Image (cartoon, rainbow, N blue to C red; front, side, top):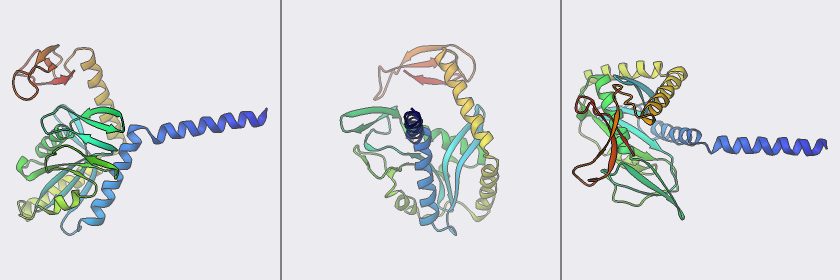
Length: 251
């Protein structure tokens, strides 16, 4: 009887461990750590300054950025995705597709996600958005990009080469010192508590949007359709206070 109970406890512990190791947050953290390590190993620290997991204040709360690499050739803002299998998508699609054998799943277009990060960081640093370079990195080694992706969507095997490809200096030494100071301050303030608050804020926004309330201004969300472009006819939720409030949520 005792052996049976021990076996049950062991099986339960193994199940919980497997559940934890395969959770999206743990898988995502694994990919971010891999990219952070590679940044410091393969990018000359005399030329490139790396900052990881930054919580940036915005007018609407906060946003979290996986990696920022500062250099005189630009400020690279990296969004890491630790997805396996085949990846399909283009710059204009709101959602991309991951395919593993016969199983397909959708995820948010990471270019659009990182656009918000770039904009928030540009405003926080007080610099032109032209100095910031958005880069999406798929960090799983068994990931293959199957679509004709934009040049700033890379895999873990070639994103370093892409960053090194920028060779024209666009940031002055004076601006470099000021930006580095701001990023260092931001890194020190990005504590576990601030990251937890950021996640809580995201959950509250999602809950409001799910109930039909705009999390940005408190207006009602109404159903609309895209009028032009590749997504013409696609339905989405938009704030009733448009154009004053431009919050939207995909359906």
